[in-house]
Length: 383
Ligand SMILES: Cc1ncc(COP(=O)(O)O)c(C=O)c1O
Image (cartoon, rainbow, N blue to C red):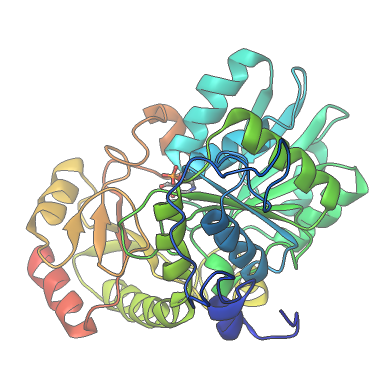
């Protein structure tokens, strides 16, 4: 496929061609674990579905194309994709990670990989220059989430990429919140982009899938080896669902961003609200970085109601009707979450409160419904 195609076209056509058997425009769901061989080793490109499956391969080509990469890898979940990245490292290696990140990512680092000898340091990365003093000769990877979950902190990918390149450190960016519609970390100098494709890429809250995209062939080879050797691949049906989701990513994101902006301003002007976290506000920390690296500001918003108590937050989330109280984000439907007791419960209270995840914080994933219905729902819940 011509590399010069633009994003909206790539989200539909990137890496895709009609199926070879009958010209099916969407790839068939090759629901098979294995492939017939004419003689040992003589096959049509696929042997066993953990190592490769045509439906997954179609998704992987699409992922590479929308993230401006050369190689895509699809996994059983976002965490399985992260697991594969950390398996590039060895005991004694060190990772610098954003301190405000998805709780499951923190748990994977701390509870699975730290006992195996990899050291993690969690720090705020809003000031990219301050990071310089934290890296040492053992630092092998910088892990960045931007905007962060749930505080919406914006981190300067290009500045950190420069620092990482100069010291031969890999930079991985979790692009789940922004999606490639909004920002493309590989274009900004990152080595690895990661997604919980469960979220905006899938877009319909019907699948759990993870993704990695890279440009470097050697890095891709090592990751494909880990993907096959560790085996946390996504199945053909799930691959199909995410591929289908990606075909409307640009349309959905456009509306998520429009609705997100309207809700952010609605909340900021509401007398029952203490504070709103949304990177589109000129007063948001690193707003200039957001303007430079993001095309729009997305549909994720966090806020603290006046009073700032756990009880008040719980009262509000329970009263919402169009916003569903649920884990996850990025689907067409609006969701509300209470990070301290849901997505970030695996981070110790003291640790999460340092980065602002207090008991009163509420997180919204603004969907693509009619904006007036969303505002009316928030109005009645805040009354
Ligand atoms: C920013 C971010 N990264 C990673 C993950 C983990 O992805 P998954 O749930 O698909 O394993 C999530 C899940 O909520 C997330 O929000």
